[in-house]
Amino acid sequence: VFYNEFYGKRKLKLTTWNPFALYGAYKDMTARLKEKNLEGNLTGEGLVQGGIIIFGKDGKAKYAYEEETGKEVPMEDIIAALKAVESGKTDSSEL
Image (cartoon, rainbow, N blue to C red; front, side, top):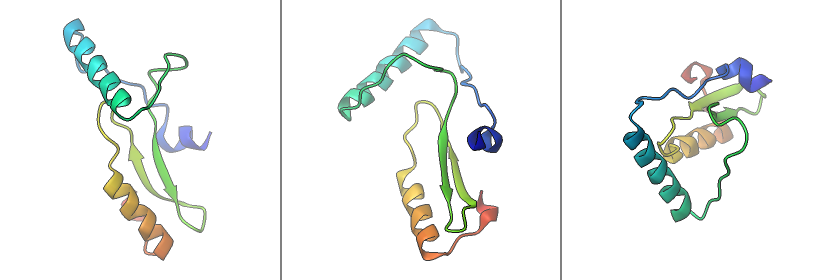
């Protein structure tokens, strides 16, 4: 519920309708999952995108990262945000 209000129900938007490009992107994604020993499934709502919300000690959202399909999660940015929240050096205007 909170997530839907924070991000809205973001749907995956195709950048192409070329079936060869779509198949290539799918193969790249499955190769990344296999490389990391992650298992996926094809159940559920596959078009709804997610993200990461980092909350401060006061319970308020301090940082947010929207998922971009096919791109790696910005781990360095997330770690920096977690360290900032832990040290209390956050600015909610950075959302």
